[in-house]
Length: 157
Image (cartoon, helix red, strand yellow):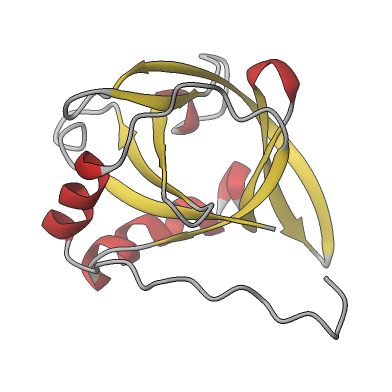
């Protein structure tokens, strides 16, 4: 976008976890894979929940996480920025599968089993918002954490 173009404005999303999950459940399930596009991401939800995810996105393999880049064939890479240099890391596969916490399908993003911990236990599930963004729910497959959804939004770059 050049300096003469105005950045798109998006409707605010709820900040209560229950309202975010209600919104997610109300969204139409995806019917096709995302095949091209860069999306910047950020966590949403109550402050206590966003704070819980902060260490995962600022240390270790995903330090400097900015979003995801979708490619043909269901391939996805995470976008990170470190020392003012953007790169793409940690490959992910995508598929349309049943949503693990509710009804209908979701665009499920799965990390390979040989990914660094905890990414080898993380699943992201996406549904499209009407404005071109995607609402995501991350699940960490570990005792006590498996039931806690961690919401985020992906916005077209």
